[in-house]
Amino acid sequence: MAQIHRSIIDAHNDGLLRHVRNDYEHLGEQLARRNVDIETVRAQVAAFGVAIPSWGVGTGGTRFARFPGPGEPRNVFDKLQDCGVIQQLARATPTVSLHIPWDKCSDWTELKQAAANQGLAFDAINSNTFSDQKGQAHSYKFGSLTHTDAATRAQAVAHNIECIEIGRQIGSKALTVWVGDGSNFPGQQHFRRAFDRYLDSTRQIYAALPADWRMFLEHKICEPAFYSTVIQDWGSSFLAASALGAKAQCLVDLGHHAPNVNIELIVARLAAAGKLAGFHFNDSKYGDDDLDAGSVAPYRLFLVFNELVAAAHERVAGFAPAYMLDQSHNVTDPIESLMTSAAQVQRTYAQALLVDRAALDAALLQRVRLDAGGAIDPVGAYRASGYRRQAAEERPAVVGGGGGIV
Ligand code: PSV
Ligand code: MN
Image 1 (cartoon, rainbow, N blue to C red):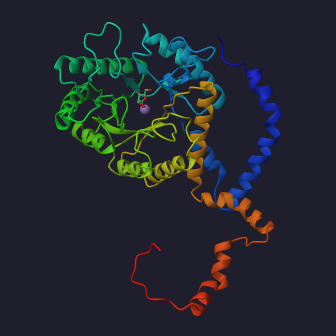
Image 2 (image 1 turned 135 degrees about the horizontal axis):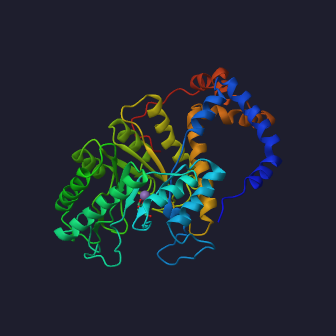
Image 3 (image 1 turned 90 degrees about the horizontal axis):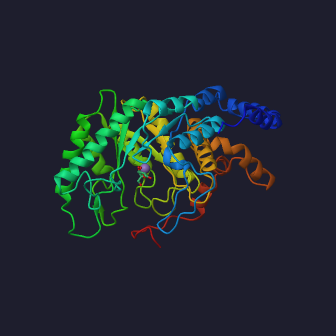
């Protein structure tokens, strides 16, 4: 199957070109009034890329059912083809992140060439020791890198080293390690010993990393283990990454935290410590819902990007996060979801670059207020009015010693 023909894209663009040019020019004028150079922002956004997860182009499912979509990719070559279309149309996803063994193939050189033909390269490679594969000697039912059985741990370590080897062949520069290891009941696992075993296993993987590679440790609060996980939070991840060395960093998947956790603060802490590996972008309402990035809580995504832009602007040492999507498309066409999610990530980056985000909305809001008979700048008009001073004169303060809740 070929990529989408150039003539189809051109015909589509032709009909919209005039509006896009006019809108862009107008936005440029607006931004210029706030001393923002639209061409600078355009260049920064154009240089921004977010990797597609190979598993994201297939239809996902829940614990209850999976409803296959039409034309699902049958193998890693089909997946690359879908990724190629996403990049061809949306131009925000120049790399793909593979997951082994889901994406195993017999000829990695051929795969690398197939990717290049689609204008794609490879981002971090993901290992999988959270499910058993056919013919595997030891089961991961009760853990992998932290299993109490040494032979099972050795098998999980060997798999990760194999992933590094595959990654070398396709041009990856990082290994992402997420384990489902943990426990379902209090008392099932010795917390300290399980973490020690994790360190012991990951040290062996770390030792196999090429000099120019990084190792991304991904934490997750729960699932599939529902009482405890070994790398439960950024604290555990940070402890492990610090123990391993400079090449080990912490990867933040936006869906892997307790509800209401201040993720942007975690981002700031990790960036300051030189330990921010990157992101798995997605969105959620309740747990690790893996919904489309920015679809539920766009402001949270903005606050994350605000930290990222600030760290880049302030040239924080060692700041070079890798950006990836990690979503499960259960009811939508994965290609559509990935294109709109990538655009949402790009848009949020652009918004954060503008810094004075409030000013962007101001023109519209000012007009709405004006039409309704309000003040163009309500706070400015309020301060200038002296209302508070007058109120203080007319309403003398009451000495109060109680709490603030009345
Ligand atoms: C685990 O929930 C995770 O976020 C990890 O990144 C896995 O590699 C991926 O999802 C698998 O879907
Ligand atoms: Mn993830």
